[in-house]
Image (spheres, rainbow, N blue to C red):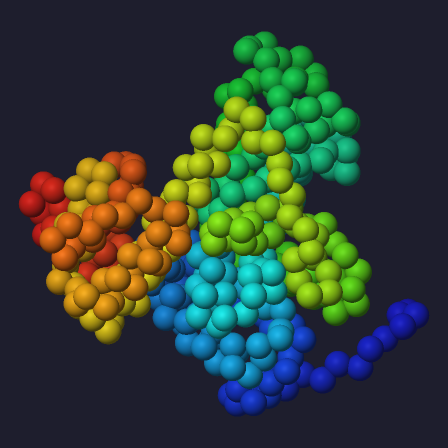
Amino acid sequence: MRPERASPIAVRATSEWSDVENADVVVIAAGIRLGLKEGAMTREDLLLDNDRVVRDIAAHVGKVAPSACVLVVTNPVDVMARIFQEVSGIPPERVIGVGLQNDAARYRVALAQHFGVESHRVAVRVLGSHSETGLIFLRNQTTIDGTPLSELIVADNPVKGEITLRQLERIEDNVRAQGTAIVHLKGGLGPALAVGTALSQVAKAILEDRPLSILCSVNAGDGIYVGREAVIGAGGVQAISAPDFGMQQQSVDNVLHQLRILHLITELHALHDVTPFTATLNNRTLEISGLPDAPRQELRVLIEQLGLSVTSPNARLVVDVGNASMKEGILDIFAKARIPCLASDERTVA
């Protein structure tokens, strides 16, 4: 059966940036994929490898297609979208991260199975980071047949149409882990069909100016890309939802802080390639020393733009990382980046 309307499509491989010139939509999928390296991996493990890849692409696209809308799927999506926007200079409303809607679909299906209803009767609200640790499920705005999920939670002995907190947390943990599990089961290929479907929906909304409300990673005005429900149409992001986080506000704040720290690390990674420095990580602060005046001042401005607290005593930068539990993760990434870092326990990482 032939479609009622078909559009001619030409597919061409190229290594020339001039072929991207004046494109209306550019999709960024380049980078190291989950599952291509040995051992268990998360999206954050791709941070340093994909940082360099995306910076290089962004510099070229910003020159040859400055008016394009850019859809980023390279992981970790939230961080890579911000890096692309910063380096390319393309306005934030025209740089969009795609991926969170896959997490929402998995959550919807899991809840439908638990409550024994069809998935279209479940409306979910998911936001945060498209990652194993930053995904937040808004229970007070997720509904089953119109009833808020938060009103269906019981302490124990649930009957049909109810769920215990422990059961719900198990479902949410499984959804967080499913994306990476699918990638490993498919030998690193990942849910390409689902991502491709989401990309086509967003691209069509932009090219045909048919506004679409969809979960995606956007800049909500504070410089940080994070998953929100947004309206996408001609020109990119036209509106961003401002949900009431209620009792989950602290969880949202924690995710935003985690993203700020990841952004800081990518900037330090790029800077260290040009101007070496040393770092000391205490329980709540990261001290950066050895930078000349000019790059130190530029880095301080960038840190302040990220919304992190920073001081500069004695030609050093002292950043409040705010969460001692992130210490091992920061040390691990510094080690991978080969940035010398002395931990407060006097353990040197290089």
